[in-house]
Image 1: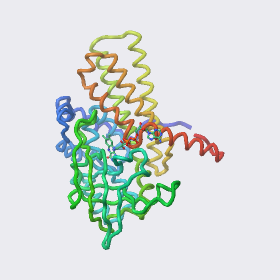
Image 2: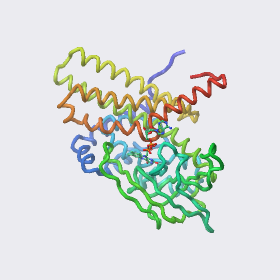
Image 3: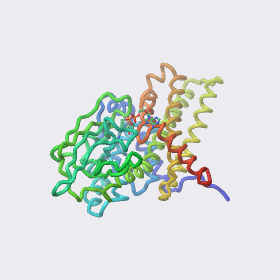
Length: 376
Ligand SMILES: Cc1cc2nc3c(=O)[nH]c(=O)nc-3n(C[C@H](O)[C@H](O)[C@H](O)COP(=O)(O)OP(=O)(O)OC[C@H]3O[C@@H](n4cnc5c(N)ncnc54)[C@H](O)[C@@H]3O)c2cc1C
C-alpha cells in the first residue's frame, strides 16, 4: 500500500490561486492599514468571491485558501473567509426555505452571516448560556446578550444559540437549547463593535443585545432542544479551519524567517535549530490538520483528532511566530512578523480553547479505553 500525500490536481490549483491572490492583494500597506484602523476589507472580500475562492461546496479548497490567506495576512484572510460563518448549520440542518432565504445569498457573497454562542458569562461552558427563546403566540421572543461575536456589526443575520427550556437536571445542562436565525435589523437587536483587540484586527467583533426580539417559528433550525448538538457538530467542522489558520500563520512566520536568512546570510547553529524545530512542528501540524479535515469532509469526523489538530496547530503557530520574532529581534518587531505573532494568539482561544481541546482528546481516549475500543 502507498499513502498518497499529494493534493488532487484541482485542489492544488485552488491553493496556488489563493496564494497568488493573497500575495497580490494583501500587500503590507493594505494589511497594516486594515490592522491599525480595524477596518473590515469589504472590497477584498468582493474580489475573493469574484475569483471563486469562497466556496464551501469545495471544503478542501476553502481549507487550503484559509492556509494560504493566513500565511500572508490572517486578519484579512479570516475576515473574507469567515463571512460565510455558520453556513454549515443550514447545510446540515436547515429547511430548503431557510437555505434559499439565508444561506444562498451568503454563499454568493451578497450577504454576511455570524454565529452567536458566547455570552459574557458563558464561553467554554456553552451549556451555561442564559439567552432565552420564550414561546409566544406566533413564534418566540428572544432575550439575552452575546459577546465577542465575529461579524457582529457587519452581518445580515445571526445563528443564535439560546435556551428554549430549562435544563432538566444538572447532568443534562446541554439539553433544552435551540438555534434561531435572527436578522440583524429586527427590532430589539443592538450591536456594539469591540475595538482594540490584540490581533485579527481587520475582523469585526461585537457584543450583541437581544431585547424582546420576535422570532418566527420558521426561523428555528432543525428540532427544538437540539441546538447544543448542532453547535458542537458545527464546531467539529470549524475547528479544522482554525487548524488551517494556524498552519498558515506558522508557514508565514517561517517564510519571513527564511527571507531574513536569505538577505542577511545568517547561518549559525542556533538559527539552524530554530529552523529545524519550526519546520518539523509545522509539517506535523499540517499533516494532522489534513488528516482531521479529510475525515470531516467525508462526513466521518473524529472529534478527538479534530481537537488534536486544532490544539496542536495553534500551539505551533504561537511557538513558530515567537521563535522567529525572538531570533530576528528589532527587524522582526518592525516586520509583518509582529502582526503574525499577535494574530496567532486567537487560534488558541476561539472555537474552543486549547484546554477544552485537550479535555475532548483525553476524555475520548479514556472512553475508548474503557470500552475496549482501539485507542487511536
Ligand atoms: C476575537 C474573537 C472572536 C470570537 N468570535 C466568536 C463568534 O463569532 N461567536 C461566538 O459565539 N464566540 C466567539 N468568540 C468567543 C470565543 O469562542 C470564546 O472566547 C472562547 O470560547 C473562550 O471563552 P471565554 O473567553 O469566555 O473564556 P473562558 O471559557 O472563561 O475561559 C478562560 C480560561 O479558562 C480555561 N477553562 C475554561 N473552562 C475550563 C475547563 N473546564 N478546564 C480547564 N480550563 C478551562 C480556558 O481554557 C481559558 O484559558 C470569539 C472570541 C474572540 C476573542
